[in-house]
Image 1 (cartoon, helix red, strand yellow):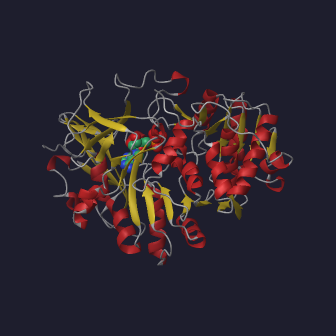
Image 2 (image 1 turned 120 degrees about the vertical axis):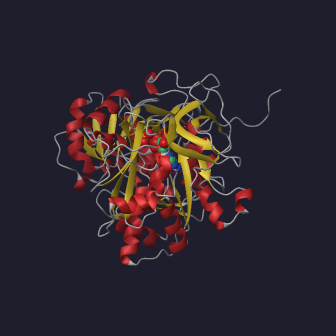
Image 3 (image 1 turned 90 degrees about the vertical axis):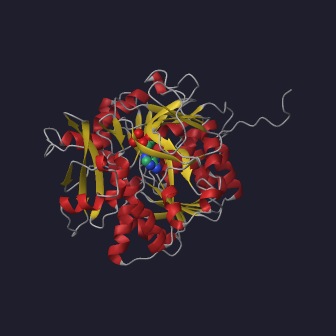
Length: 544
Ligand code: ADP
């Protein structure tokens, strides 16, 4: 017997419809390409998004066609996002921080037909276009006066939508229709496309809105620092309008001062970003003696969150840090580290150990740990295994069939992360499978050593990589970038680690470096570090 409830397709256009109908006057604040901070509302963005749909239809864009964007977080980008999705096109977010060849590969692979880009990327676009024949036209996110000089077939976004009506019949297609496309940065092999459906994004929005997840509310003022091109914007492009939160879109400026000023001027209560952004912000605040007036909590994810960041936010500024884990393939949120009842009953010191874990699973998902043969491993908080995940917001395949069959016999997706799960259900990443240091057949967690090293006052950033070793296969070495003006020797850092990690985990060498390379989404680029270490030899034979 079937249920008798209405079968309403879960398409994301309904989310912006809802925001416009029921939170219509709620503000969207945006730092635009012109550098100005402009003010709009959900109702106005809804109208612009419909104009975008009409403009896309006028270009001959139809259901399933890929429309690329390459831009920072702005109101125009938001209108384009919903305008494309609402009419059944697939919004493909390109990361302007990738190399030209990678962007060209991705855009060709996706078969993008239009490109909507920030004017600041005009030089890149100029080089890109001859390499991507499928792109018919470029629309720059700006007004006519700010159009970059270009020989390309290009138009200003404002002109492109100007004559279009603010009426368009959205939806009317299957909820499983493709909605968005986002490529993983492909630290191994070519980038692969994750093709979100309307349904997966809609469900992900509801999942992240749980109080124990991102828990946004109508009273929140959300600064979306996570770029819209990074991992589906962590779903905030859907969850914020779903509850009518005020949305602040910071444009290109990600330095500590710009972020701080927006937080204060717009009275931001919540934000989400990778750890490196927060480090820049905290450094700016410490150097300039600044305080937060309204900021209440931040979600940190994308890479492991050092304890020093959690402590500084909490103890010095009264801001709660919530760690989240996920990946492009998981929409992206999978686990969130909030206390369950048992953990909440523990002392502050004991709770910190849980805050440093990646957290507990969102309802709707399943996860398991397996060994290399696919056998399940215990959830004892000690045994590391490959983390596998299953659910309606998890990729079932990559666009174009890249990578073949990516699910195991039970339909679980292999995250490529190595982790433990403890008795309270907290998952903790010990490494990405390809970054793990294998010494004498045992795994050393590079993340754990990095987190501890980051606790040293002089250390701005730390990275651990494995170096080939004749006896132990690999041994860890630690690279540290010191804070400006700070001093510490390799010996100081070794002594600092001593006693905080197992003896056989102690790095065989500590290198003080000027710079730790970051990848295009602000994560430590271990591939670049390894390349830079070519020819490096361990300083001495250590017997462990
Ligand atoms: P890319 O693979 O392109 O870097 P993703 O954002 O999809 O982009 O990366 C996902 C990976 O980031 C995860 O598989 C995991 O290794 C890492 N990651 C995400 N969140 C965390 C976290 N809170 N702690 C540790 N690692 C994390």
